[in-house]
Image (cartoon, rainbow, N blue to C red; front, side):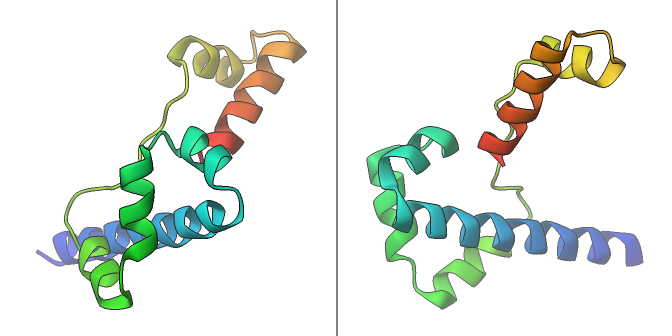
Length: 99
């Protein structure tokens, strides 16, 4: 049972980091942030309007709120070291943009 509590705490920390990052990038360049995060204008509005208490409650969900939108073949090629430098660079850029 100790692991479940620790896992939920880790999910909460991940969610809070994601929400704070999402809000920060939305505030600085909304259009680019929406594209990189893969969220709609309505979702962006909602994230920006959350109170600290609402943000904390959402982060405390047992669900991971962020997701990765990278192509599996590019990831595997990059991790396996079989891709050329352009492929590895593309994987790195995709990872940075979706983080």
